[in-house]
Length: 255
Image (cartoon, one colour):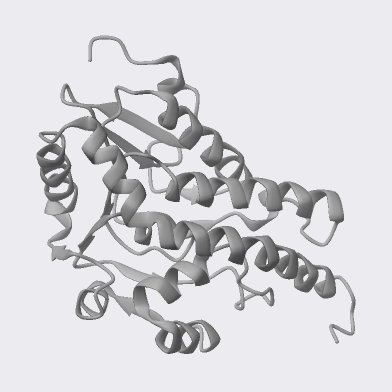
């Protein structure tokens, strides 16, 4: 594509590039280095996905991180005070729309998980094809670790891709799982060396562009309809309960 759309340069934590055949690569980063998830990321992600949705030159999406991590750090303070109703409402709004718009995106998604992902692993595991680095480790750092319930959609995705009992065990015990374990459990498609993860994901994405665009678009919708429905149901209640547990932390008793 000769000229990139304006939105390619509008998001400070996302580097966008697109091949001639229409493979859009979106890379999480912070100042060009490994990404630190912030309130800005949370704000921008649903808006970015909306921009991607309406750009018909995007045929397949590849999601990846920068350096040796996918998303493994968070600036929790920048997300606002979740114990306050208006701050919680904003996170509720953005959180639901970010994940829901991603799962409803009408093009195939390939994730290139280039390293550990302890923040919003659902972004990667929602992909139709997940290529994981041999260095990747999946976990959930920001929820029970700090005392709030995991209501933002991550658990719904873990349950779908890992199985209910395994997902419950890992969440309640603050467990993690490696890319090899994810492969054995069917949560990722392939495990490759870290240096090859993006090239392998891009190779598969380019292969997908050889099919008619509408075939790709509607196949993506068919393959994600169950998890889309589950996320819509699960986040509506889950994020409200997450906010309630955060508000509870504001009281010394934490009953």
